[in-house]
Length: 446
Ligand SMILES: [Fe+2]
Ligand SMILES: [Fe+2]
Image 1 (cartoon, rainbow, N blue to C red):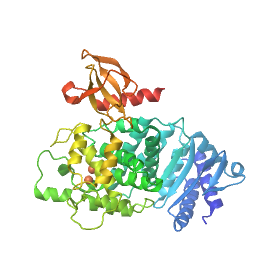
Image 2: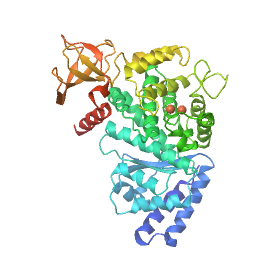
Image 3: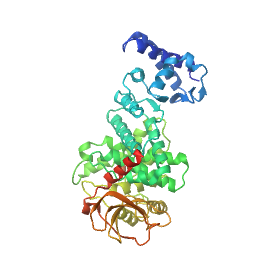
Image 4: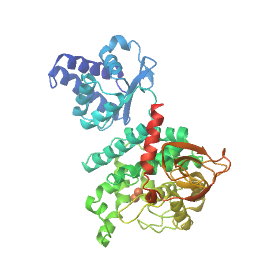
């Protein structure tokens, strides 16, 4: 058992001294060093140590601490001022990270709760996580953007030779899963955001959202759904080990360059091995994500594929096909599904692909369609029982003029209107990603 009372006492002492003395003063350094020693001891038994405030009581590793307000007033005071409800220390934490935490908690700058973790990361604190008292529910756009930031941080850590902390990744997957459960259409709409310059970050988040949705459609246990979400979020993490000029090269790759790219699944699974606290199958899923159902693809292998790998392979293919690349115009969602169906039984497991196709719908969210009235709209929700009659937002009227405010049309509830064709957004110069971002922002204001 970790020495709870000593840990809380020394943290409290460091905070109290930081109020009175400048950084680096022995009155701060001594208790800080002691805390880190005690934590290192605790990490021998388990990889993380957590305490937090639940219903105004201090809970240390699931056990309530009595008289905490009298014994550790500085600790409770700063946590409440900063809106922090949970502190998680992770194995690998060093002295500097701990004194950094003391600086963050005692700083005069009032940061919004969600910015605290960013500030920590900028200071190089990657093995301590602060969770914040929710200031109202996070909007779906905040969840999406937060996930992109997390992937960016993780990949930057790898590039700098650091082992990324697992806690923020697990947290992001919790948030994305929650969004898929509560508002799947809106979050799938946001996967239409394909940032050309930051391709890898958005692609990782998009694949994770699609994979979690597919895992949900397959009725997987939450534990497996979580593992799939992480595997998808980090599936291309090995690309951090491939030179940037190869990744971004316009035009064809030489065979040596192509061999380099093919290393990314192995590099990725090696990075995952060094991260603690991730689901044990994540490394295998990442290693296998380019091995196809018929075992073509790479790395060349005859191993038995993990049954969940195909969820990531299918989600990866869908996002890649619908994205503008140096060598490829984006396919519309409907075209992408058709392309994928042509490879059923070869690249893709037919059973899982069937679940994917029925989940994503005949007119997937993000498809631009023309109605029999000549209006043009964006599909915003799939109607499960009537795949050819989704809900959409009309963005161009019958005479072809852009509507200032999109009008919702639920085709299930509307007679006299039907879809006559899909429309390539490029022909109308319509920005699907901006549309969904705008919709999500409006939703957040409500
Ligand atoms: Fe990949
Ligand atoms: Fe990928």
